[in-house]
Structures are given as structure tokens and as C-alpha cells.
Image (cartoon, rainbow, N blue to C red; front, top):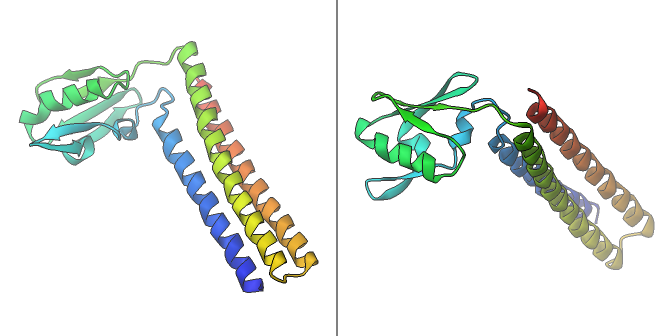
Length: 187
């Protein structure tokens, strides 16, 4: 029974880790006024008939904090890359200088910063929901073990452990969110 209990806790922690990973990936996509190659992660373009991610047909760099440069491996792809960036609706305006595509990242307005904070909070809440779902599944499995013969004390201890784990993950989400909010609101 003890091994089953440990397996249940471990499985729930893995599910909660996945929720945290997803949160971090989504928060990276929320730009905080600084250029970051991951901003173009979702951009796909038609590359000889196949829908291909931008980073597989070019090098994406940040020469400075407010500029992205996209260096295509084939110059013939420059119009396609420009079109794909515009179609991705990221609010970015690509400029073609014949050699590479340069994207200036405009400074964020106060209104836009508030929108981005709301989006970050929404992503954090989604992560918390995932964590709580993991807790619910864990509690259901622990209660089932109690019905299958696990002592009441062990069930109570396991439920307490499950809540402790959940609280720890929710705290991590809150910490990550507050860092991201500071980053977004910093001018």
C-alpha cells in the first residue's frame, strides 16, 4: 500500500510539473518590451509547400534589446518570411534591407502593459487549475486506497502531504507570476 501511495504522489507531482512547464513556456511568449527570439516561435511559413517554423529556415538574433534580426538561409525566402511575420499578428513590423529582415520592437504603452499583465495572470490561473486537478485526482486515488484497506491515519497523512505539495506548487506559480508582472511593468 505504501508503494502505491508514493506512486500516486509522484504521478501528481509530474502532472503539476507539466503545468509549471506549460506556464513558463506561455510566459516567455509574453513580451516585456525586450526583443527575444522566442517571440517569433509561433511563426510558420510556406517553405516549398510545407508549413515550416521560422527558426528552421533562418537564424534569429537580438542585436540589441529593442531589435530582432532574421537572417534567412535563402534570400529568395525573404518575402515569404516578411509575410509570415505580418500574418502571425504579433504586432511587429518587419523591414527588409536586402540582406536580412529587421524588426524593431516598439516600447510598450501603459495600456498594453496592463493587457499583458492580465494575460500573464490568466496563464497563471490556468496553471493553478492544472495543479488543482492533479490534487483532486491524487485525493480521489488516496480515498480509494482507504476503501481498499489503507488505515485512516495513513489516508489523513497522505491527504495532508497532497495538500502540502499542492500549496508548494501554487506558491511557485505566484512567484513566477509576480516576477513576470514586475518585468512587464518595468519601463
